[in-house]
Length: 359
Image (cartoon, rainbow, N blue to C red; front, side):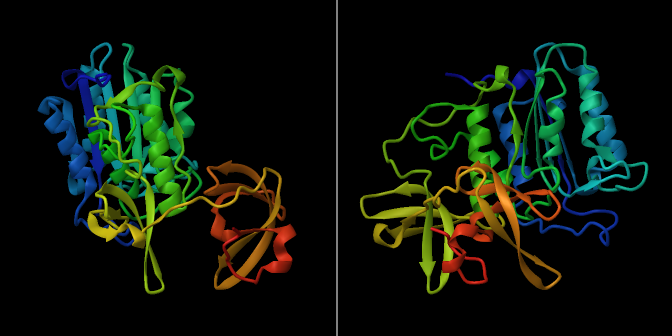
């Protein structure tokens, strides 16, 4: 099965901003091993024409340049073309509480909102398909707003709209693995759908960063093939999450290769490029914890301004027994939390007043 996009019919707009004109407001990120360049290289190597691949990096990603790039694509896309949009950097809110993707010179009047982004691309009258991705705080607005655009847009974000995000490349690295069709993403199949891509990224963000990575994949695009992985593998452990213990520290990684005696582990870090071979006897496969049913009364650990407290809440949603969406009793607000931060009220007699493992 071949991928459902053709390089000659693909438009790529990538914005990677790791430094800003106002560093006091927007803290710079380290540029070592930046994954956005690797994603751009993927599309370049795949054969996307230079005239259809726009990658704006750091100071080149100013508001005017981004607007010109969007206008250029809107004016030149043809019927049934494919658009891939990617942003890495900071996310914030404007005065209307709309989520902004922070361009290099972000300031009042130079705010690139997710709403504006979609509105501009939705003006293209010809039929086309688009995938929007973002690795930044509040990027979940991409998934929330994509629902409004008549099944034309799919979106995969790094975190829900109301939350901040990790400063690591976990999301972008998982996206790149899917684009490359790495065999450990889906060892049993020779292709990877858009829905499977969202699932893989979602699990990585939940386990590694304790973040819910939302996605909106229209039904008509759910089985859309994103990449051409290598041939299916027969080693069942490939792609599994694994733990290594060094003294008292736990290190999480993913099994990317194996032989009869050892596993090769790629550890999660800022750039996700550290790999080591370990004896099979040293490796523990990651396991999710016991499920807590919807409606279970719990207490949620919340350190605020140095004060560590437990707040009563109820479980509203369960994401693969890794994260739970809870509603606080005190103010009826909601939050995604990992299992280290919650304890069921019926188990309080056996728990101490600190985050604990509830297995």
